[in-house]
Length: 290
View 1 (cartoon, rainbow, N blue to C red):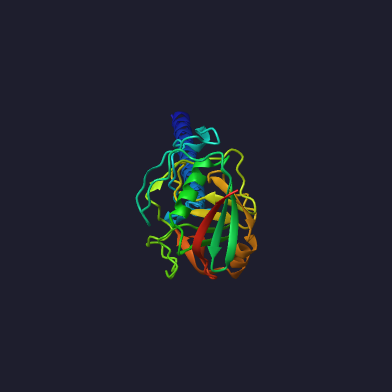
View 2: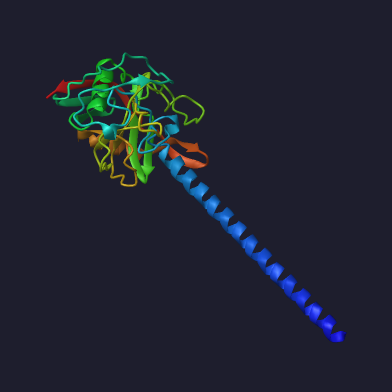
């Protein structure tokens, strides 16, 4: 009888040990799944917060290099599907209208070459517009410039770490606006009342002197906001339409960057650049066919 009881006790202990081991394995698996899920969320949140800037062009820039919404004329909704130079552009309605203008022509002058001069309080900055590579973006930019859309506006956002850009093109930031870096205001969210698809993204790189459209995080959310790359920003994904290159005046932007911010935009605890300490006011933009 004693031997039988001892055998039963050993069997009970063995069952208990196996149950504990199985419980331990299940707990480890649960913890691992939770940690993997959390790390994925954190990574996505960090990347999202950095990009939404910037170049989101607007709504706190949904960022980065640069951020902003961009309305444009009718290339299809997805730029990569459009053969360049585009012969037709489409522009769709957008909210957060900072300054209402008419839609750009749906039929662009795709054979023309353009030089844009940004007349600022810091000096002149000139762009060669890439009409044969980003036809609908150029078509929109020329239209807005000729309509006086950019006149008396301020470049409202400067990024100086990892992404090196100066963002402009939102009439909510007027020449007299005091930039406070509030994340609850309208600055950085303005559009001309329309938006359009991205272009020229294949192999896009944001090297010194690149001018690209800021957007709100989608391929069809380009509007009026754009950013000037004053130092190679190779960490930016190919999500922002490069539509021009700086031909002169880049030193003006670089000097503005050296002066830093007057305040910083902070979204979800992440710094998203700031308002330039050295104010850059766009008096006008003139377009010349070359």
